[in-house]
Length: 553
Image (tube, rainbow, N blue to C red):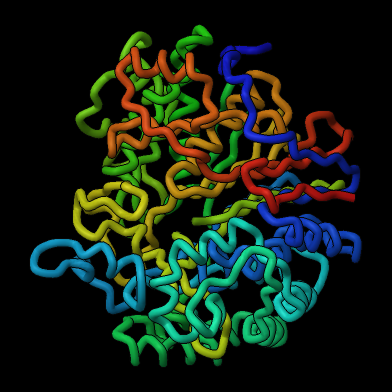
């Protein structure tokens, strides 16, 4: 039964439906080489966990402006037994971090948290990927690393998006010799679309990682090379910071929406909390006329992001209220929404038992599933394009700039315009707040959808919108991913909309008081579903990503 008739006016798509069906296994990712590697490892006897990990490693080669072993990830895994676990591979701040480390002369200096040595957090992707493969996969770790290394060695033609990202940050890449040598020509000009991009240093690194495992990365040559570069360039990360890194095994967030179970990532991801919170608001709002739906959803987003700015942070350092995802709290927020016009949201709300009932102390998403019952939703990142713009000499590894996801000073916006409070200030060993939203949906005990997105704070709204289209409107994942998107993050107080949104809808939103910021595209979402029990898997990649692909066998 369709409980919430959403988006019936949103008939325009941004491209053809990008879908695939298969019986034994499915992978959806932002680059076809990564999806194909995931399918290949399943053909060799691996399962969906193996597929997800090799997909992530290959993305670090062919989509290195978004993710890689120099960054972090959040991974949800559902096993055939029905157990669901959340693996937190978020980067951590070095031990020498301080709350005012990016403040100079009384003000935050944006560049310090975005480019160069101080912008880098200790990477966590390797720790999570290795744990996933060795505990839940079927093939050796070395096999996964070799598949990615072979692509790095052989090279691949640069996509338009990859080349455009290099152009956009070429000036910053040029300031670091190792980065310049990999992404720019000898004359300083950026690599171009269609050129074969070979990365022999990265191939060597991946093979060493395959042979030596996490010890090589966290307590061996990679940690030593990175710490040496940091000492020479004003950074804070040391060998001890690498040796101290551990991934976290966390309890997933579980909520419900119109009878379905929604499993998401807990803090320091804000994604699971706020996807659940917004769904609670909309469920509490009841039946909504189709013409009112985009406005109501945007207002719900705004309320959730106001809470995000104040409450969210690393649960080991700050009290993050579980009540944010409480049904009664969602109902109280729903009552604040005027269906006819924009309501000013001046500040955050206060969920029940906010001080006592708390959680335990540029980006890419990929999903995978197999016929044995393994499902994976993983979102991985180095933050903005090419992260800190730093490549560790001799390794080919791009380091993240995840320190920008901390608050430089309360109220100061980060690269995505997000503001925060004391809960998300830097501190030794602390994990910065994230918007990553890997999500698995269940009907009863049966998984039916693994989904997530890339695109900074729009990850939350992309995941939410896709869920609403699929769960309420009965869209296929491909149909849902093709529809126009919008995003409201409280600050700045504007509604970002894709230009493909119908003009009548834009006019209606303006009439209700929304200030529209029209953009070409909002993010990139990938999904794998199995709508019918024992039926085929359906994989869909975002049509905004020209190189993306869903692949199965």
